[in-house]
Length: 69
Image 1 (cartoon, rainbow, N blue to C red):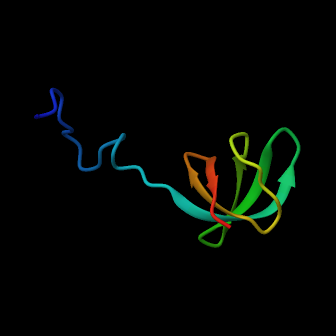
Image 2: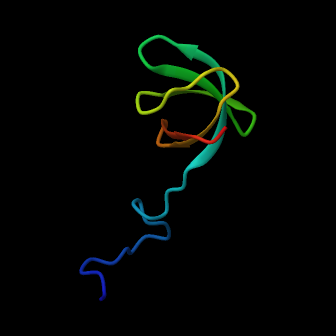
Image 3: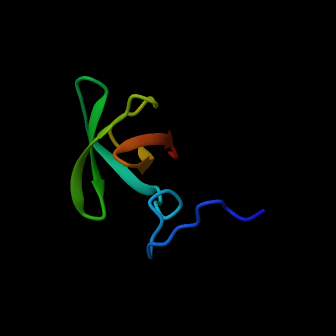
């Protein structure tokens, strides 16, 4: 089945996005956390997971989707 509206851009906004691996460096209030992602510190949401310092997360669009270890 062909898509009815194929992507015309070099990278599709829907299927071109990828999740990344990040390490929790600090758990903040309001279900937020600081993580290290490719050597950069980012603030993300951990509303969907139970995260602790040192946990390895899979993150997409600044949202932790799962704990890998």
